[in-house]
Image 1 (cartoon, rainbow, N blue to C red):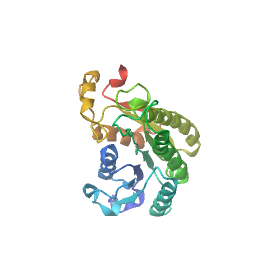
Image 2 (image 1 turned 45 degrees about the horizontal axis):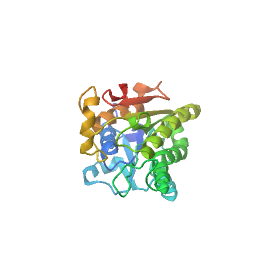
Image 3 (image 1 turned 60 degrees about the vertical axis):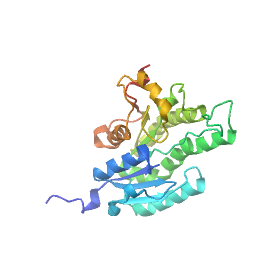
Image 4 (image 1 turned 120 degrees about the horizontal axis):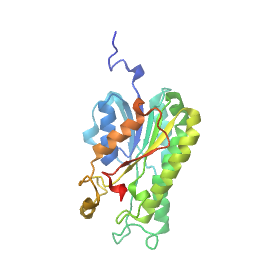
Length: 252
């Protein structure tokens, strides 16, 4: 007899950070549409657009820049799992702050404490969460996907040094995690978006479109599909890889 979705013992579970908007929001919707349980977190409560399928969703408001809040999220997420395996962890949450003068946070400007804030969210949070859910991911023979950036590999006119370097570090972390998590039968990869139409992008980004071979900015859905691939059985022999979702911008 064919099993229905309500017979959920084989339904997979994914944790997605920064899920209230942009890439995280679209990724959560995609996994839910494809039959996964989703556990999400963001600073905000669940957006109205996401308040559906309550049987298969769990949202935990969390400040990933605060260690106590991260530890609470890990605790509550494990309670939600209730001993079940975790099949994917998407480290999507990130920040690219500006100075009080609306400049991107660079090397010669801005408060150095702000650099610590950027690295806490963009680098240390993925490390802490990956370590915190290692046992559950091992049980699910799961996958970790870190969201990096084209700015982690090239000088970017708008991203700012603090953001760019934190993403460079996350790319390196992905490589090292892939090696160590392989012993747990957990794959670790990264997705490096280019110019994606999210709240982080301003009108000035239109100037970059001529540098994109596909001649358009990407959408959150473009990134979400790649993330899903890296968590699916179709990529079961892929680990330690960073996939560019840039419309070809990284070629130049």
